[in-house]
Length: 285
Image 1 (cartoon, rainbow, N blue to C red):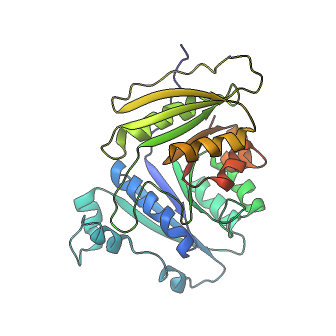
Image 2 (cartoon, rainbow, N blue to C red):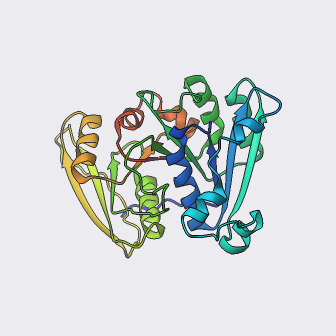
Image 3 (cartoon, rainbow, N blue to C red):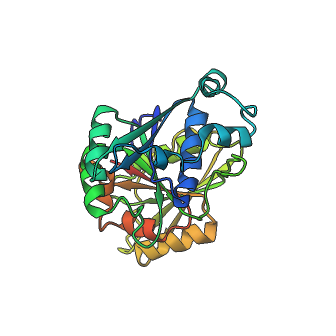
């Protein structure tokens, strides 16, 4: 039996946004996670102007969203977010021509446990967070990252805040070590929604040796575990099985010694990210 990995639970959620409609789905997930964990949500925007108030006017309102979700009364004060819901919200506007420098500086001073990012288009990253930005951010982040596709199938409704997580797919292999992803999947299942959660461990065995990666299944009363083995192109098979299962979430380990986003570059995880119809949670190991 493998020894379980000690994965820190989420105590702070970091949500960089450019306040476009593509970010709304990710915003809903970031807000819901902070609510469920009764923790801090940091919303960050980078502008090249000293006065970025016009940018913030485009942001989806936290209080308006919480009122629409039925968690706050209409006209609630800013203080009600913490007093009634035990969640803190900070909005940080940074000036700079290079989002990477601004984000790196903020992450260095104010580290988080989870980054929530919107994804759009073929590149699998927001258009304002392209390759050079993501690489430099990643080298210092060392942080779990939840990628939420624009217009894709999510686990949180922006309209009413309803959270549903029924099926989780965890691709596993001998490297990178899968235990971190398995443990995080169980933790997510344990606190999201109130339904039973099917967690499928998927191994692509192209060597045909039948040697399934050994993992420890954490104690999760609401989890139903299953394993399956497929052959073929790893990316194609992960996407195919995720579609077949109608997975609500994919959780993948990444070789994150240089940071999550850096590990994604050119990896199986990055290619899955570009094609996934549901959120993907990358776990550095």
